[in-house]
Figure 1: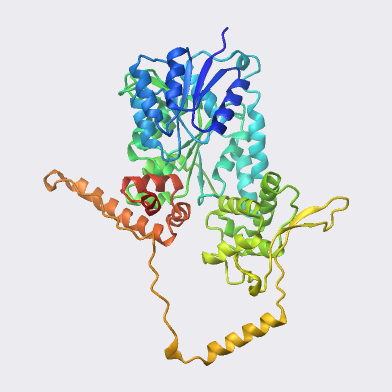
Figure 2 (figure 1 turned 90 degrees about the vertical axis):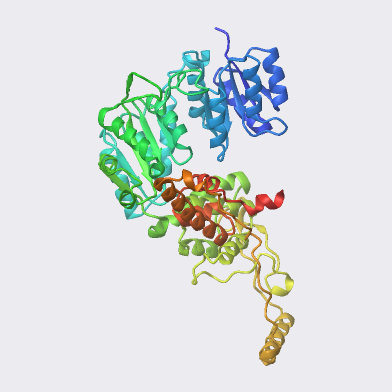
Length: 548
């Protein structure tokens, strides 16, 4: 049997190398193109069984490559690769003839599944030799080790509940703020169940618009819509005998909620454009950071679906309610990223650990992980702590720390990652040290004299500080309304709700200096949902407009 030829088209060399090695080890014959023009030339002169095509490329975009390729009569299945904000591009690509799409960063299982769907029954020779289910327990074991990093009573209770219901074929509802580890618990449930040798499929309901999410979950038949050149099984079919994890279920449109309810009740559904029902046996685990009972009262979530999902509910506490887990998690992330950025670091300064323990962590475990990673990259504890202080997020009891740019006259001296043996015999271990706070007598006298002068200065000679102008405050005109004669009462209500959401999002973005992840956390929605709403409401990022 000839090896299956795959063309990888991406302008980033690191992505091409990664995909080439990954697919090559799986038995595919891989060739790469670094631009759209090169890809079209290779497609015209060679025969490929499938194409992996990045959407965002300089000079010629992936969509233009796809349009020209289909226009020249090319019929190889094309899998589109899109980033976080590429949902609209993915919809257009599907309508232009793409067979599937994947969101970056790519997962091995996700990539293999997409190629398997695109190629039908054809698979590389090397995929047939080992049992297809053999590698899956290793992934689940890794997930199991991640969830064990907790010593708090609340997480022990959650883990005990997971052990009791893992083998029960009932839906599970995971509740908790963003970043509390809901996906980790979902994988733990799968790993401890009798389905652990079968697929674990994750779908983020907030990452896709409704029309694309329906096709993603339930699949479509050939000819169901423009660009549907072949039938495509949905995630529920791919998760047959396994587990499907629906993250951000609170973002799902009401219309799709009705279809999901049918799957839970009857274990069957219709593909988009299909006439025959499809039966599946999939364990459903869902997660949300929303209060679903409030969403029901607002009319955003079906009450019957809520009761169908709420057979077993596991509520994960935020990190601020289990502070005893902060230090073990910090040690875990320090080992994880310390090997990558500053090999040999064994501990953090006491001030850092104390500030971490006192901080409320609105982003929960995900924010802690990012903070430790930043600490490993910067190699300077004061920069991370100054960031907490500057944002007003560090508690009043946190230790007083030097500024990141203090000179010699600040009394703090230089900062560095020093060699320090501390308790390690035979080898020096890097330990992050806080800077010395010794102040010379000359500097102390100068500070005292300056303070006395400031006290004696008359009040009427004090010059007020100039008014601060926020550079991020740019005009944000709302989208123009449609003609009055074309508006129904329902349309008026939708527009009023959109404008209210728009004002709330704008206010929070300006409060957080357009830090979208922080704004999403404050608004209690997912990061991807916020990106979608920013685009939907026509909000302009002033940093992007400044670059133009």
